Length: 142
Image 1 (tube, one colour):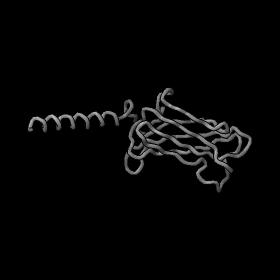
Image 2: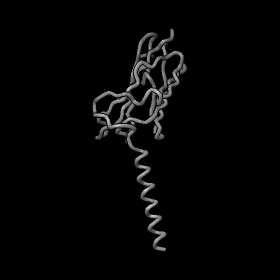
Image 3: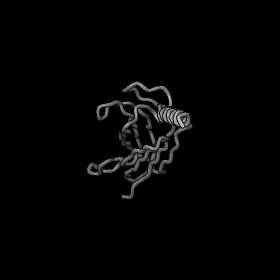
Image 4: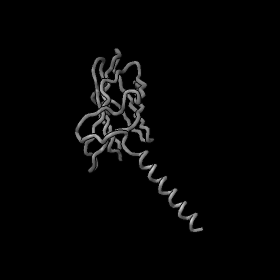
């Protein structure tokens, strides 16, 4: 019986260590304040509305709520002939997701044709870049 308990405990420890390795950074930990590619181009899946062009999609570690946190820099250009509002969704390989609207508020108007708008999305609990990312940019109805 004691031998079975030792084996079970060993299997549990190995499982926990394997999970910690899987949840770690996809590569070397970036330095705070330095902009870096969020993932390799082959690991970024994009679905962009025909009225939009993703002109910037990068990452940076910045202080947020007291610790270094991953932030996504997103800039969208309106390539249509109508003012637009966009919904951005970013899904990470570890199950986390962030997103929102660009522009966040419409009090100052929508993104005019030919202009760009940007927003920075923090990801709580992450201090390194993801292994892979899915980016969705959709237009909102006016």
